Length: 259
Image (cartoon, rainbow, N blue to C red; front, side):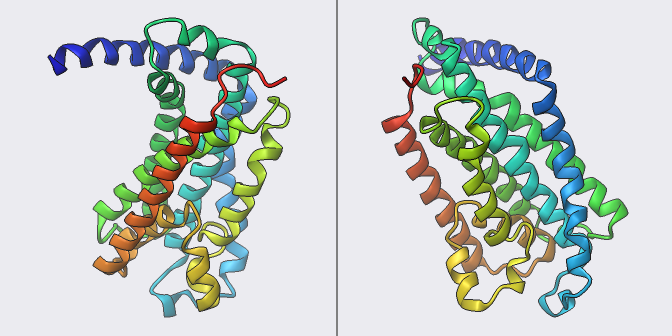
């Protein structure tokens, strides 16, 4: 019985994801931001890395730039892109029309987020391969942690994007409402500044930020310096944020234009 239910649900999700992918491809500015920003921004942090003693923390420039690149992919390929997508579909009454059909609320949100999340996943794989081959990042010592971190980051960004869209009135203001999480994550989650370079007390606080666990797992998978207890703590924090974000989306997400 469950299999019979899942088959049409999967078909509906694929159909919605294909339609969303078509719309995404037509938005040239969104595609350019999603593809180019995560590739370019990591190189902007390289001058700052030259003055840091990375070896003391078991890091190298390749590993730090890889972590930064994937973190930027989370923020710009997935999070900011999805905030704009959710708001645009709501303001164009697409979400309202979809709710009158067979799709459930969860299916609508997942189907809308799926193409962008897949883009972020593909970009993370390309960035990883590029950093390993050309920036001497080295092969991951615990690849399962990196995979877990990437998946956690994608899921968190999708949920947080839906939550941010709940409080965003227009597509034009989406960049403004997404900015606080972007800036806080860049500075405090180990993306633009390695967490090992922060003072211990500040690093302990920043470890509780939404994207910090995912970024920590990604980096720990490459360095192999993340203990089992630290990995479990990161997973627990990521799950807590994900559950809280999903609950908030179910409570406050708006399906009709804000007036």
